[in-house]
Image 1 (cartoon, helix red, strand yellow):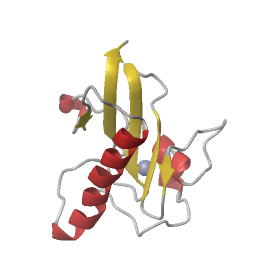
Image 2: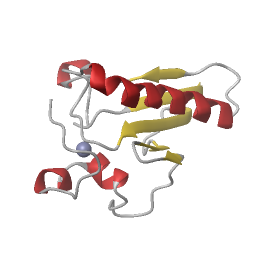
Image 3: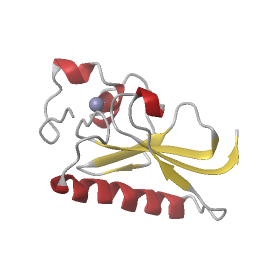
Image 4: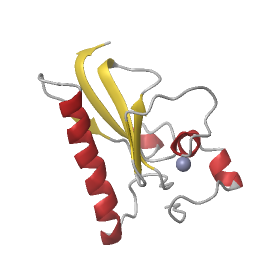
Length: 123
Ligand SMILES: [Zn+2]
């Protein structure tokens, strides 16, 4: 697992990570932030597959969920809490999904852990 210190200056590696750039407000073009605090940021998926499709990411770079330890629990607990709050904010009454993919074999396309919050009619 590749992790860096919390909210570091962008290293050369992170310059190549689109989600690190979004997390640090350095992505090209405007990004609408659905939620942001010191640890977590959420923003609409660029290629939504449903009426509501929001990505929730830790600001710190984790390649994926492999190798998490107990000290990662508060951060990923916060991700779930943010998902719950965003679901309520978007008045998702038909239920919602929260999922992540791990590794290429699991269908992960961006190498920075991200959770999909999905609800409503599928595109
Ligand atoms: Zn990253």
